Amino acid sequence: MSEPVLDVKSLNVRFIREDGGLFSAVYNSSFEVYEGEVLAIVGESGSGKSVTALSLMGLIDPKKVLYKSTNSIEFEGREMTALSEAEWQQIRGDKISMVFQEPMSSLNPLMKVGAQIAEVISVHKNVSEKKAYARARYLLRMVGIENAEERMNAFPFELSGGQRQRVMIAMAVANNPKILIADEPTTALDVTVQKQILELILRLKNKLNMAVIFISHDLNVVRKIANRVIVMRQGVIVEQGTVGNIFNAPAHPYTKELLAAFNKTAANEDFKARKLMEARHISVVFPIKKNLFGRAVKEIKAVDDVSLSLYEGKTLGVVGESGSGKTTLGMCLANLIKYRGEILTAKSVHIQNEKDFRKNVQVVFQDPYNSLNPRMTIGEIVGEGIKVHFPKLSKSEQQDKVMQVLKAVGLGDEEILSQYPHEFSGGQRQRIAIARALAVEPKIMILDEPTSALDVTVQAGIIRLLKKIQRETGIAYLFISHDMRAVRAIAHEVAVMRNGKIVEQGTAQEIFNAPQSDYAKELMKAAM
Image 1 (cartoon, one colour):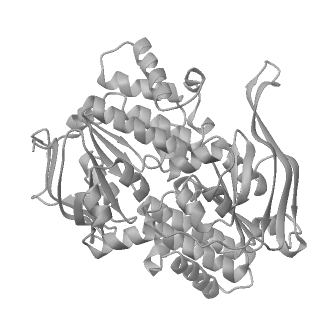
Image 2: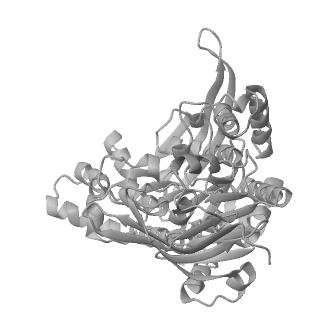
């Protein structure tokens, strides 16, 4: 076998706590990465996957971490652990590039996306501004963004979550790196675009003989793209081997647990229950171009004449490509954006005013990092709604309720109450967001990609939790997701959206086993 392009030996990463203690995030990890291969790193949230990746990029603050002297990271024969920040900057984005998990936090909100991609090119390549922008347009087209010329002038907030992730991927591959580190690169993408991105990464890998380190909780994606797999748990590599060996003959009990959660599907249930909410002929139009007088001269229909119902104790899954209108529809049902049409709630939901609506219709947003207040502790975040909607509870009772809901989502340590969102992994932050919504005991919950940042075992646990709560309380869910396995595990009925319209709707069994529309068939084929 040829020499590895990256050779990691005895990597140990210990974070310095505020009290002076140490937390071991990665312990004694060793692995190699070879040219032209895809090495996947899987494991639960907090297992050390992303910390390992950040170490390979020199992106961990040296003031907050301790490395052991035995650490060794060799890239093309060059030892990286002793590099200065100036030397790292020459390598980052050029020789080694990374796609981060949360694109909205990684993109500059004040710069147009075309300028951001061109900047990455200009920093490392001696090219004119015209050539840098021309390549930026080419990259946007290459990663599947339509109307690349127009999107060059868009700001990140004007793009959907999937489109923002594709911009990040375009930036990462802009300079044809030797190693591409992809940290959950398809998390925000629907299955059809996910398939395109995976195929794109593989094409680039083959063309450039590029190595890819692919970090993901989605074992279905890992199985499709990886050559070799590393399984991490609590900072330790517990197993590594070829993708065939890991999926077909796992040796470690934890790997077997991951695969058991991955293969779990939901049982079919009858879809008959009391209606809690009905949406009639909902439409949302966004202006994309205005004249001098501020009037819209060009519009896009984000939601186009959509009608649906949510039932007590049942889940309606909404699937479709990025930009299909899924999230916009969810925000209409949550009364967070203006819409045309009518949304009715049953008397049993007890909505008398805006305060009642906010208690009884809760939302879990797609990006937990941007939906959690960074200045509030976890105890304050989860307890905020309890204070507003359960004012008669004493402080101790309120805190007990906070701990109860945190334990329900797998975060039961009392130490968590005084910590802040930035101290948690993406998956842990998503669980906190779910706990915040559940704390006020809503009748209806709108879940916008609620498991997108979670590994398969935690994802399975969250889905089990949501189903258990649904059985006990009769809560109705609108479950928006591109993850067909997650939808299949929880949804009783499924609506397929495209270009703002529902193109097909039926029971989960009907949609997954016998889709009628060509688009639904394409989605199912890409997902399986």
